[in-house]
Figure 1 (cartoon, one colour):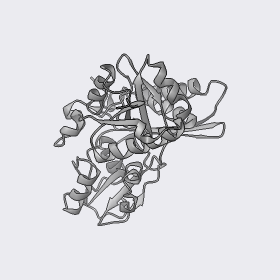
Figure 2 (figure 1 turned 90 degrees about the horizontal axis):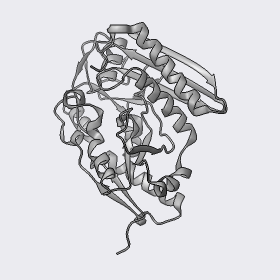
Figure 3 (figure 1 turned 45 degrees about the horizontal axis):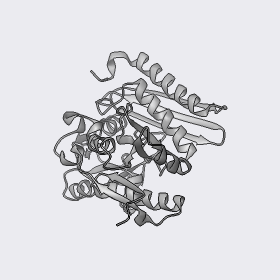
Figure 4 (figure 1 turned 180 degrees about the vertical axis):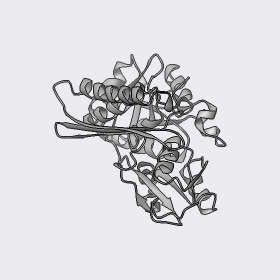
Length: 313
């Protein structure tokens, strides 16, 4: 039996397998090989097993990446495909963010059987989410609403909504589109009013840092604009020590030679919000300029907000 050209690690969730399958098809076309030459290896992560509480109560973002990182480092897989918003800002030694493919639409989708939008929900309605960002943004916009915890994969959350566990929820539009479920969106959230999670809609392909063969194969598959955008957003997160403990939103967009960034931090109860937006012209070192912008605005908010925002211990 011929050995696969690449062994691609993925979580076992339906969404992870869908986006990994799409990545495999795109990579195969880029490399000029059959998709069958690239093997998908399913790996169950701690984040997939824990479904009864918020991520932060169980250990944070690394729950979705730890087992895949271990599989990379011990040679069971050659690359791993992640939702970039699940990737910690500091990667383990020996692991590199090798490639950022073209980014899907980063917006949130509002999903409800009771109303067309957040503004249209009646007072006292419950919004279901396990995201501190979505909780804080909801309460900032509508302090008359309630928020209940709603965890699980996309299908599970939709079923819980149908069962009446909440009156509405938010889901990443990118995930709905990758699953062919975009029609379930009641409306799309204006990213100026409620920016998404940093790196939402983007995928990360990680690899061993010293694996030149793999890095060479991935180099031409990277989307330069997506890389610059996520570098800005991750620098903003890093400056804030951002994790699931902190309600942080960030969105960077590259348009020609310009980079526009909007970032915000809120208190978990939505009573206060700190926001920064800025547009810069990208120079010869666009990546450094992007990282500097995100870091500077993150540090500004951290200094302004002080102890009012919840940061990592």
